[in-house]
Length: 220
Image 1 (cartoon, rainbow, N blue to C red):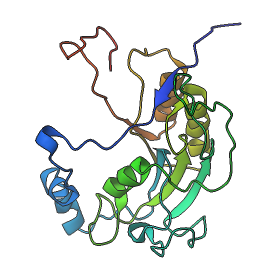
Image 2 (image 1 turned 45 degrees about the vertical axis):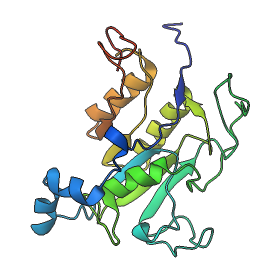
Image 3 (image 1 turned 30 degrees about the vertical axis):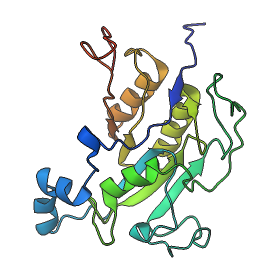
């Protein structure tokens, strides 16, 4: 035995309306970040595979080539060509929740019933009325959350491994748990993907020193 680690519970993220209830505006963000300049130059992300480790992706959404009618778009689709549901709809790893259900029921369809993963995928590569940063990318949807609640670190590691096996060029994790550390298994797995040439993106979160509940080192 080389090491033992606690299996961390990671809570499902929710879209944040921001300061004074302002709504996220993707069209404005595309301009502010300079992505519109890249799009105008003809850079669409075509040929790049982006893995979204999250609540899944709504494959029926027209922004991802879907029909717009729930349950009518086959997976895999042209835009969401890779992916896996590691947990099932009812999974919730939070032992304090009334809907606590720590037994995953995986299946092959990573359709989204939480919304966050679809929101993130839209920022990355929606191609509809509003375009994301790279509207030509091909997605891998790696669903680690049920419809509500939370997941666990071991499930996230499974998703990272699957994304690597599927040949993702970029992997996005807009999720995390505060007070982890660089040797924690999810961090080690992410670092190994980076060393193999995968661009690994992770959200920083809202924890940190001097906040409403001040934290110390590794708070994010």
